[in-house]
Image (cartoon, rainbow, N blue to C red):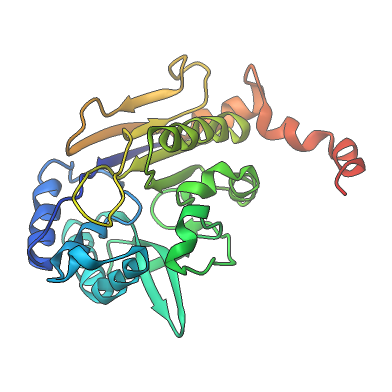
Length: 286
């Protein structure tokens, strides 16, 4: 089975209105193949919308929670695009409010008018000032041709999360991210690469980039579609990678059957070998 995946390297900017942001999203879709099974955007793809407030120059990090005010418009925008294109869109993440709590939530639009959600379960220490609450659910989704999981940024640095997804049958983990430094970007990238090797699956990594004045942190990174490091894939496990510091879309064909072949008879059968000696691990699991 072949699955076609498009990965958006999104550069946030200052916006005059939500409509201004929406126009940017629409322009990007002109470069996304209509036959891609999945499209991924980065973490907090909506972050630039904070600049639409007249008093933005006075904002502190706690004002990031004002992104929740755009949630309905965000859902309407991506759900409409998903239905019109009959395409699954993992629309990065945004902030949502439920009762007194704010969550960093990824939305998966299925192309039929429905959507699923994943709330970030491990908040990066630098996010703690935003008063975001951690989600408590790790589940995979049967949306589209294969089973998928979502690991938002720091979550890909927690090996147990990808392990749980792989044991639930995920073939692809989508990793939208937002890293404020180059060091942060490489932590996420290298961990994403490691998760591919450990679990013999694909990771699609989409970091947001951009820089504006004010409280919004600079975004660093380059989007990449990652695979295990073994034939028939590239030696470094990078199928496609963005090479600019601007808007860019990369598209890859993922060979799903190859994952299962290599799990069974590859050079490094890590998917099975990681659980083969549970008797040893349990002795030290205290």
